[in-house]
Structures are given as structure tokens and as C-alpha cells.
Image 1: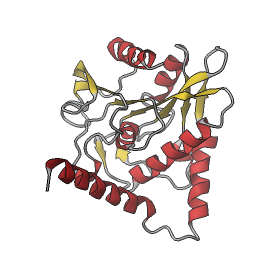
Image 2 (image 1 turned 90 degrees about the vertical axis):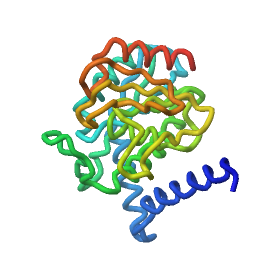
Image 3 (image 1 turned 120 degrees about the vertical axis):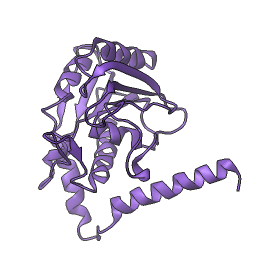
Length: 241
């Protein structure tokens, strides 16, 4: 089997596993309830718009495992809105019974095995809703995620986004089905992380992938307070506007 064929086969196999997680155990009778849960994440979103005439470029921001009001989400939302980008951040914890996938005290994750199925649904739903917003520029929609949200962004493998930003997430994982960069070929990707991220005990960026990588020197996880990270994100977005 040719190398390219084997690579494509592995990719199809990995995607089949993710789709099995997304669809497994969901009988038709429960599907409407799941759809209603996803709709709640959009209804309770954090949204900021710049003072600019439409159409306005939009960033769909996926928060980390501690929720929409903690970590990097409010800071990045405010920063991007102040520089001409509308930002919509779905609230994953608006889902009834949604549990956190991590423990900040021990810096461990993996408490909710199907969390990436949830986040994938939320990205798809948010993208569809953004396309309906009368003030949004449908040709300039970007995806950005931090930490757990960065994992979700790196695993998004469908068209619809002009560019993808992954923050605080190495593209390696214990599970091979959650490793790597799945974004479509040709879609620019920016990855930002610290040289030493305590959550991963190593670099928090997608080093060794086709992404443009910015490594922040030092120890950290959140990236929004770094001037270097801010400059890199703006430069990446502005180049694609």
C-alpha cells in the first residue's frame, strides 16, 4: 500500500472512532435532547462585538476545561473585540449535567471520556449559527480554542473556518485518536504555547506539525497575558482578513 494511501486510511480510521464516540449510545429517541443541550451552549454564549460597521469578522472561541468565565476566555474575548473582531464563545457547561473534564488542583484531565464529542458538536452548532448572524462576515470566520478548547480546535477537520488558532495544547495525546492536527489541508493554523506547560509537563504547542508555532519562553498555561501571543494572534488574523 502506498504511503499516502496508508496515511489516508489511518485518518479515516481515527475519524471513525471519533464519530463512534459522537454517535454511539444515542438512539433516535435521545437525539432531540442532545440537540437541545447543544443549543443551550449557544444561547448562553459569551459574545463581544467591536464598534465597526458590518460585515464583521468573527472568531468562534472554545473555552478550556474550567469553563467560560475562567482561564483565558474573557481576556481573549475582550482583546480580540478591541481589535476589530467579533467573538462568540459557546458555554459548554450550559449543558445539563455537564461535568468538568479536569482537576486544576492536580493538573489532570480525562474525567469525561466523551468530552471531545461534546466540543465537536458545539463547534459545528456555533459555526451554523454564526452563518445566520446578519452582521457577521461569513467569509471571515475563525476558530480559536484554549487548552481543552484548543484540543477541540485542533481536531476540527471540516471546512468553514478561514484559519484556526490553537492555544495551550500540544498535538500529542495519550490516545492516538486525539493526537495530531486534523484541520483541513490548506487552512492556516497558528499554535501558541509555553516552553514548559505544567499541564503537560512539556511544551504546550503543536510542535512538529504543519502549524505556525509560537513558543513562549518560560512556564505557563494561559496565553492571553503574553504580549508576544497577542501580537502573533493579531498578525495571524489580520493576514487572513
